[in-house]
Image: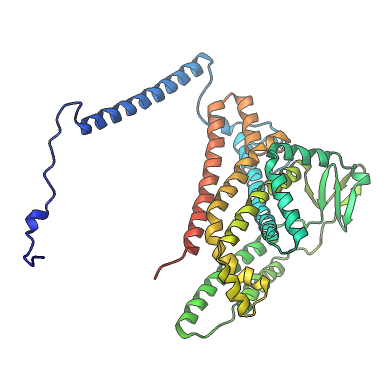
Length: 400
């Protein structure tokens, strides 16, 4: 091999060919096809827009979102914030949005817990437990979700009335009017205590990160639980006392033909939440099982050789590694449980879809109503995706 120096001029890229206005030139063909496709899409969009505007003018339907400020006159049985039929359509849609979030957030938490337990149970060495978990997964995933919602709603509607309500525990009643639970009369002092608890959790998380960083520097372990106990328990209780929050519990009581007091979980919400949680948990269980099986068997053997209990191995060694496999497909299930909540209209639960449908029927603003529904689900889905992508990037392995 020659040791002569290579002339840098010989490494230059060859000169570009000029574009010839000929169909045989692939660059000309690419430009023509792109212009043609953009033109066709633009024509379709223009035609749809002009056709829509013409039909609205013929039917004398006003466009825009001005109807949101008009009185709704729409009764909503279940609402998180104060609402009356004299409120505006905007507040009615806001109530529907909060009802959707109430189902989605609580459903995601419960489905994650139930799905994880079933996924771990499928890998249990107990033959009966593993088979029962397998049967649950196969049966639940093979039945349509809408059928399951109707099944649970029919079961709840078939329960006895309030006078013959099931009474499984103190203050807990289950009837065809829903589930009654003991509760407290929520006041501003309770909100202040809750905010103090959330603030304490954030500060505890930041303190834990700082402690771990210092431990990596000097190797000295430091306790976090005393700070967590003070910030997440003592601080909220102090705020509770300072704000004068009452300690009295509101117990449900049978008065006349129905219960009074306590917290009411309507049959529609209960059936929707139960159906969504049980259905989605079947898919999450398989994701969790696959993530655990993806961890090499040597990790189990090494941990057992160190004398760790199987529960400790699962919690501290296997599951943290399995999360890198579990989190990406889990995002899809969280999106599914949010979008599947739109089936609430089938059992009479008034979520954003139900209220928007009633709104567009009353006002005739079909395009705006559909646009609101699309915007709501798009915003929720993007928020879930962004959070899960951030979490997935945070737990990803970092090569050194």
